[in-house]
Image (cartoon, helix red, strand yellow):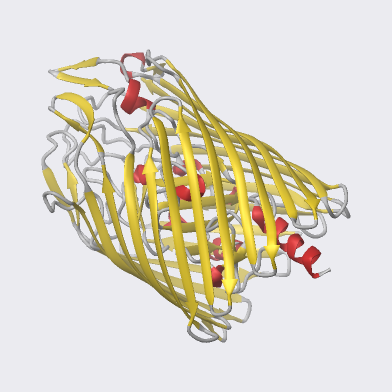
Length: 619
């Protein structure tokens, strides 16, 4: 009976399709080992953003709420819906793997994930895992993994609705219906968002830029259903689609109207089966898509490459074996096929990746061990082998020390490998390099962790060394090559706790992201950044405040390529919520209350002060 209960808990959290969620600090994390475990027992540094956190924040998109997570830096090219990059522990934007319910939704051409298209109305939970995780998930996980879980149905089927508006013509509308019957749970969510925004590029920096406002519109839909035939076997299906239309500026033609349309979608089918007393199987077939089209004055901009669509077809079979009371083995195989459809004549438009992975977790009294191994075989450049070894020692009931070392890699993109020789005029040319090799990383980490009741403190020292960096040389005749090394070391401190009706969260990252050869700092990454948040509950009201800080960051001028410095900033955000009755809640949010210039990319305008008011209904 104990074994059955253990497997039920593992099954509920071992995949993105079902997991146990609570609003306490005794949180469950899945991403840190592909199998559910209490967050306080994770050997890899991790943060969980719960549904309660999302509701309290009243933020619009995933990028907004991730800004406050320790180790995370966000840069955005002009506000909501504009190109958004996430830097985790000082690594490049393409060094973080972003998963949606366990599915890759990234572009195989530029290597990025359109995180700006992921609205919080569709999201139930986010897990951020920091440090090398390629031995768990393969390419890109040099800085870590961000896994986003869409909303699931629980409890009595009920309706929910949200409506709101703010300055700069901002409007938000969302509605959903979900719940569970005896054997089936389901959920459907739909949302729409629009804003007039601000001029994306600052005309004071680039006099040729269009000074008009650059708006953004998004419509999103998610749906899922899961049916349990009995306690041993279930089937589930999930679907997600987000479509954004974004206006943007260029630096030389102020009369041109530039827009792009990006669609991020995902569909999956999965089967969970208990095949023996100690054997739990999870089989998933999925497809994640990134489809971007660029328009110039209402027409496809075919002169500069207008259509880039990536289909990530993913088949995963994962098997969890309970070898003993305190030992768990995870074995899996995965096939990924990435196919590109584009008006650019790539010499190769498809790649296949076959992967084998295993994980072992063992508890031996006060000691805990985690081992992960993975091999990824690519059709276009060969194999990459990665591994992780982690150890934890329970000092006492509340303090724990951890140490880990791991390797990771990033595969070259299809742009890097196969983009055809292109002459953009003015002496500028670009060409891919089919002889590129993957980037490789070695990360070492030491941690100290405290967990007691509603208090959690984490401290970690990390040292990440990245070799074989993929970059360009011989400007303006741009050829992609493997050149140079980077080293990023630093310290992370984070705390979350509750004192009666008062909640406190704090995060601080001190890091040194640099070129290992020259010592030059990596662009758009600060040496120090952090946040402090307070929340207070009283008489039906819930109020909160947050201070976000970032030090100065190096960047480059878009037009000249010359180095520039982005100034540091201190931003204050405020939130308030009032429960009108048990079903109806009023919410208020003010971002950047003092109207700081918190630009995160040189030449691009920040949004400045923003105000938003909303009304939510939960049946």
